[in-house]
Amino acid sequence: MTQTDDPQKRSSPVLRGVIEVAFIIFLFYSNLLMGEFTVANGAGKTFAQGLADIFTATNFSIAMISACIGYAVFEYLRRKF
Image (cartoon, rainbow, N blue to C red; front, side, top):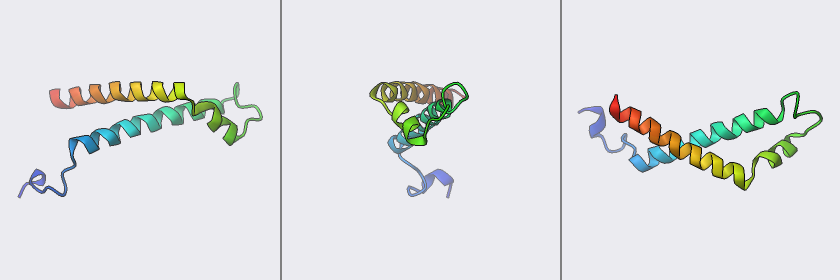
């Protein structure tokens, strides 16, 4: 039996897409959070203040759009090569 014949081991394309988009959003927010605590921005800033600064509707919109574009590009490359 090949690896793709077992339905329990094969994830649905929708689930895989959701996981990949969520991972791209995680990377986006972790990058924003690291930027909040650089020498220029982070003087005396607490972790809670940093989280409050990055979790905005604008940042979430940017993250969703970027994640969908990133997912589309990786899907295209996955199918092409």
